[in-house]
Length: 248
Image (cartoon, rainbow, N blue to C red; front, side, top):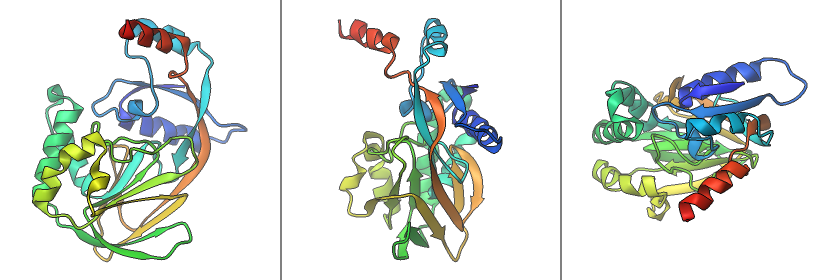
């Protein structure tokens, strides 16, 4: 199965594959051609049309974890749902990164931080006033924001990134740090790892997964290790030769 499109397309394809009974993990390739296309930054695919045939016949496979909240890449609770809603209304000609950046700035100016209860695996229930909590399988969301720089999509863990009670103006000033993956320098940012994540709040807050609106809290995320097999373009000979040509 080859999914041709962006993160939303990948989201729908993965959901369909994982709902079908099968004796072994389904095999899938992601040919990313959509707006945000954050998954391609963690799971590479060819950019040049002439490389697609070799990619499809490479027979190089690697495991890919999935989340039980129907996400293969990143989900978050908090401001992310507002950003997704606004980015979806942006002009497609500007591209995903520009639309998400504009939506992020507007949302940061209007969003109100929310008190939540967060539990990682069997740990204690933590109370935090947050801007957002990202539950990440891959490193990127929001059109190239490197939200979870250490996340690996095949290690059997979520990387959980909590952006706490930051002000509107600090949120805007720190946006470049999100794209560089250096936001961990802020005292309001916490990183954790878990296989199960529970988020509750007295006031329901939006949840998005892979750029798709996915309801509101309470939300439970569970990792499914090795749920899929994905074509591994990074280790292919063609990708290596591409890099060699670039370095030359």
